[in-house]
Image (cartoon, rainbow, N blue to C red; front, side, top):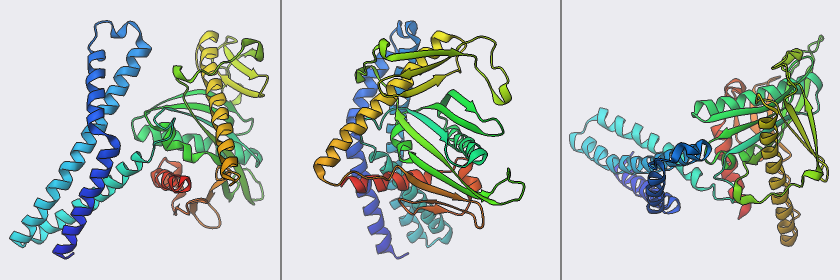
Amino acid sequence: MAVVDVSEELKSLSSTMESIEAVLDLDKLRADIAVLEEQAAAPSLWDNPDEAQKITSKLSHLQAEVRKAEALRGRIDDLGVLFEMAEEEDDPDTRAEAESELTAVRKALDEMEVRTLLSGEYDSREALVNIRAEAGGVDAADFAEKLQRMYLRWAEQRGYKTEVYETSYAEEAGIKSTTFAVQAPYAYGTLSVEQGTHRLVRISPYDNQGRRQTSFAGVEILPVVEQTDHVEIDESELRVDVYRSSGPGGQGVNTTDSAVRLTHIPTGIVVSCQNERSQIQNKATAMNVLQAKLLERRRQEEQAKMDALKGDGGNSWGNQMRSYVLHPYQMVKDLRTDFEVGNPEAVFNGEIDGFLEAGIRWRKQQEK
């Protein structure tokens, strides 16, 4: 790499970093941190554990955001010095180190730039993930369980807390449906590009003749409801069913009728929760999920009106969105962005950042 190329590259990186810093508004983040630190230091903080958890979690996240931006700015500044040293000393090892760091900084900058694209109304929220088996019988149920594991592994690798609210197990293998929360800032904005129908093509392990089977699973991503959302639910419009929690093969999770299923009669939306030990807790969690679904329904209705005004009829990217092919070749491909990888096993183990980044960039392009 010529010296002039390095100089231009460093200018470009610095310019991109300035744009990111402007979008992040570091001064405002630091002011928010100061307010949260004051709240976190209050003696009465843990009188309300839920509120305390929110404050400390948000504080930790904002502090990490600022540290990350400051560290990346420092690395960009240090790169110039590293390249100067390599040139002055004519040292191949130092130059190799500088070029390796340049590649790493580019990657870190790309990742941070993607974060600045999450500017939607609900993007900064935690996420609720609903997965359901669709066409394909037992293979679809097995596929739905693979997707659940994929997202839970992705969250685990990032240190994000998750909580499974409800899982309905299929009779032979896999799951009929599941609902779980990813409790991290910007989880909704990041995962929302995963919404749609996922397709699996493979030699079915459940087919005695070893035939190729295509199966489908649907993924729905919802923003967690906050107190400011004002999603009113009339109790008279709810049907509440109580039943016994169960695990795979009918194994009892507990011996009381504590699981709760809520049906919102006007919309037909059904939600369940069975992870808590008490019926009251399960109903409260199920109500939160129902509110999230109604909030998303309202958002989609508003978006449909906007699309009608724009005259484009909306877009259908949320339907067929990704194919996982295990036979006759190995490939996972996003049908909207054309991003693909040739290692499905790694994808099912939670390595989906490439798909998420491509999806977020693609969505931003569609909004222009």
